[in-house]
Length: 250
Ligand code: M1P
Image (tube, rainbow, N blue to C red; front, side, top):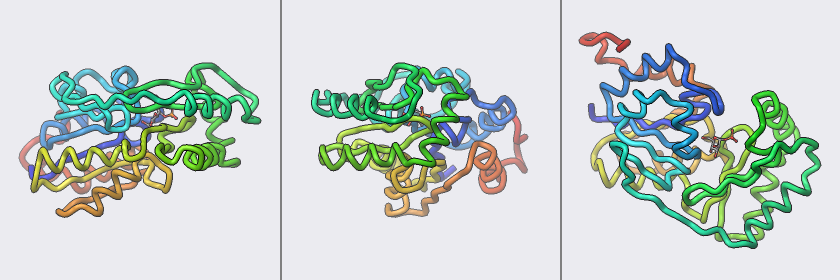
């Protein structure tokens, strides 16, 4: 196939921090057998392994974890972009968490990942109900947007993007998912890229990659999806032309 398929994970292939749906998984494996597939997530490999069946992890061509700052292929690290966040940035984020008016704190508010610092006011220990409540609060109050604006104003060498329901991924400026476009177009010159993500809005962590792909040369496509069902529908409609020869379900 002359197209690389690239997928965000949370919200695009799975529900937020949830395991992949069994029926979708069966379908997705047939996609992986017919196209080179890359996954791109703000999460680290530990979380991705909780969400994706081992078979999917084996079938995909590569996984960009930690906002594209790690690449795994055939179970091996191809690169890992480490960054030491200065104390001033950490203190600023801790103070923001502390000062928030949101009443619930579950613990694990700052998580260090490769090239990324993930920050969450409600905390990464939030259960699905607590996540939903924080998400609704954030939609009403724009707390994460305010965090991003304040951080960037204070530390212009850093950027932050909204990845999922409860947190923000902070990286050195430019160390976002757009790195994936540079990497893929160098490794696979001439191949078109189709990218699926649910966070394509301004400030969303799929946006930098969506923009890089749209602005790049080639017959690339970018799909802003609602959820994994939407991804499934688009794949069936536009990427299953091998099914006249093979079965769609592995
Ligand atoms: O992969 C998307 C995002 O998933 C999680 O987001 P949240 O916990 O806010 O729902 C995080 O792992 C985040 O880093 C990641 O970008």
